[in-house]
Length: 95
Length: 476
Image (cartoon, rainbow over the protein chains, first blue to last red):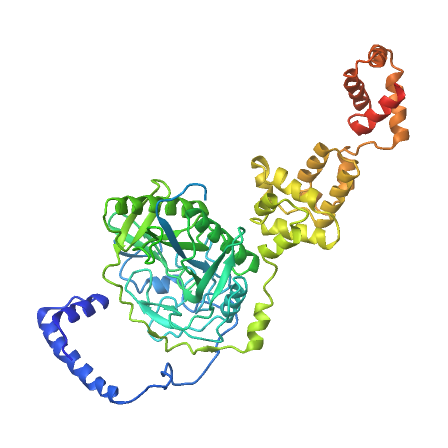
């Protein structure tokens, strides 16, 4: 399967990455190889087989609706951000 | 619809309902961030720190089933969660956990007061995003709302006018509030509506290109925005131009919608099964138990009260579940509700008294007694209203309506013996002699004067119509 520069640009946009031309060239080759390897799976006939969503076969796992401690306070969480202001996370303007 | 429109309108609505759980959908943090500091209701799970595992809130599952019952919907025993990927600062995970492939609530419908049924396509559980506040050169992120449980309810495109869009949203809101699954506070975004609208020429089979108006949170803005969008799209079509498929925002202040982002290049969310959350596989018994917990809905109250409360009064009352609940209690006690319903709409919901809605509502017992006293003419209609308003004062809570009426000296004298004594006394006064003579001479108008004198003598407590009868008899 051929991977085009357009595909790479699309994936980069979806992943929020900005890539150099050299990186794009490498990724184009690598992703094409990965897809080729994975496409071996197409040889299997999976019609009538339920997709595997998870491997633990657990169901109906939920907790009760009780408030517990947050484990980490606001200051600890905010200290992980690049920049904060008025106890909020400051980010470049997005609208 | 009174006017004939040139184009047919097709509207489908997506509604996000915030479920009133104590904790968030995937973490054990307080879900009620009202009046709390930004980022104070956030756990490492909401913050999406590496290695954090979401744990599903069982109450959200139960409320989703109850909401399904409130829209006559089939519940899917098997449902699961998926990741919807996008990058935006309001979502630290880089994806939203939702139910894309296997939603918990299947097909249902909402019946409008007009009798028309709007079909529900499905409804699914998902986590809300955080809140962004935009400034000149930057934006601030508050994650308190991250993963508040939402039920997204998707209607079929069965709605065919802006008025019907408003009616649908209102009826959906009422059903969710009566079902007890949400606080339903529209001002604070507890229910948010996205309205998809397209136009086509009458007779055309194919639907036109649609625009989506995002994030409406009042019934009035839903109707206004849909009306505006009809005008805008019909002007384009009149000119032979095309409607662009896009997301538009509505401004209450300017009364127009504006394009936000074009959907020509389809969004690529790369949905994938959420590996951290095992699927749901609910038993019939479990579903039934939750389904049956759905309390009476507006449609049930319409059926119950249609004989005793006029339809337009009832529609007003249905916006206030607390009032309808009180009427039900009165009706359960086999007492008449018509007078109380009238007090609710004409007194309590009158503009000048609406602040009373913040106080505790008088009990069913108080209202039953008040209604009985009014019906027996022990209270004039003015006095009954006065007692009703006073019953809202905290110091009168628990007091019987009769005691309060006595305290306020408002009970009318109906006892004919006592009334006759007062009438006799008035008639014996020299200043009424001329009026008596005039009345006997055929001037019936002066009866009013004499009634007034008796009322004055009784200090307003006599029943005027009873007084009038006694006077007529005595002056024959």
